[in-house]
Image 1 (cartoon, rainbow, N blue to C red):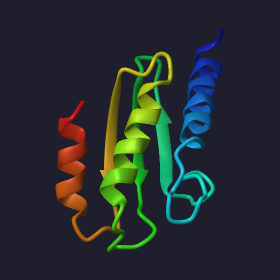
Image 2: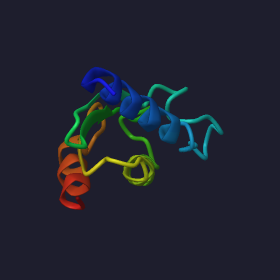
Image 3: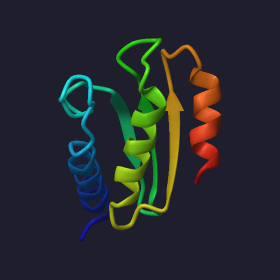
Length: 102
């Protein structure tokens, strides 16, 4: 398979896994809610993306980003994740915390 097609396949698998992460407050998945943006992945299994909670004071932001990270980790071939949290009251702290768990 061509490298570009392999990368697209990985990205498709990541998005499919993200659709399984449901916001318990809305009942909608995180893809539909557009809480995950700018997904980039390479053939080495490194993925990066932005998590943007629905509110700067989202009470379940920590829970959601943990669920998102776990879902992406189930994609075959994914070895590392770099997650950036944006537009959240504790974005910097949560970004550091979630990336320490790699």
